[in-house]
Amino acid sequence: MSQTTIATQYWHRLDDGRVQCDLCPRACQLKAGQQGLCFVRAHQDNALVLTSYGRSSGFCVDPIEKKPLNHFFPGTPVLSFGTAGCNLTCKFCQNWDMSKSRQMDTLAHSATPQAIADAAVQLGCRSVAYTYNDPVIFHEYAIDVAQACAAQGIHSVAVTAGYVCERPRAEFFRYMQAANVDLKAFSEAFYVKLTGGHLQPVLDTLLYLRQETQVWLELTTLLIPGENDSDAELHAMTQWVVEHLGADVSMHFTAFHPDWKLLDKPRTPPATLSRARQIAQQNGVRYAYTGNVQDRSGSSTYCHQCGMLLIEREWFVLGAWHLDAQGRCLSCGARCAGHFAAQPGNWGAQPLPVRLSDWHKPF
Image 1: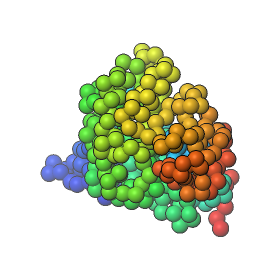
Image 2: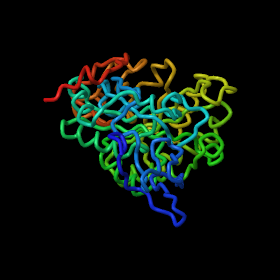
Image 3: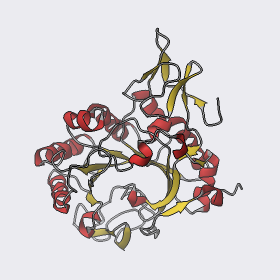
Image 4: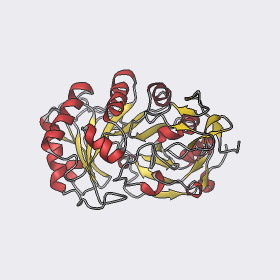
């Protein structure tokens, strides 16, 4: 095996000589030499291996709100990276150049777990985000990075579609402190037609995260005109979230733009995002947000008890801050759900592309 190819745990051998991947519900069954749909897991040397260990499609320092996470140390910088491939086939993918890539030259950046942790410290990042493509497919690499980061006090943030099996899910999220899960819709028909997956495994992941872990959880739904933006679906989704996950789980409704294989749909009107936010609030979601559009009101955080503006945001830039050191409203004392520092971060909106070799300075 090469340095970037390592053994994996979640698979079993079939009677006909193939191996079955047990990482995600796709359960790819592979002959020798075949890759899974995700591209990075393959049948080699009579075993299932990960072929992208220590390789990345790029690094960037972002505001944590871009993940999006609005209640996990607002305003702080996060070192973001991904690999290549994905275990879903979303026709509307907004990161298709990385997630749909089946070319090894996409993975042009060498990055050991220790190098990533060291760079995060040097860059002043509070967290590292596993994003751009779904981190569940580079399970072993992500966990090693998370362990290296934890040793230096750096948090780990998973940006994921939550399409993962029970056993690897439990191991993966044991090392994460926060997650934004992409709840792509609230209908099985949408998942089958536009993602190549199924809804229930994602709901199972959400229930697991909320009921059995301490991982800070927020949700994102990209609203696609005519596909998942009806009042009926938005009511059903937000009612389910409040009933099963609780009123404190933030929901982000973001704008679609034509991309990848879904070019015949128009951009999402801002009014659709505002309507989704209002429906969520009507159904008891305390923290509902609009995204991918300029909307100060829709991107800011308000006290669920008295309505006071707690955290003002505009395009990821923080303005007014009305929380005390414990995350309580300065007006009525109600606790705002989340993880907050005594003072907000001041990273701002600008991303900072990073070449890891410039920042990895072993201590």
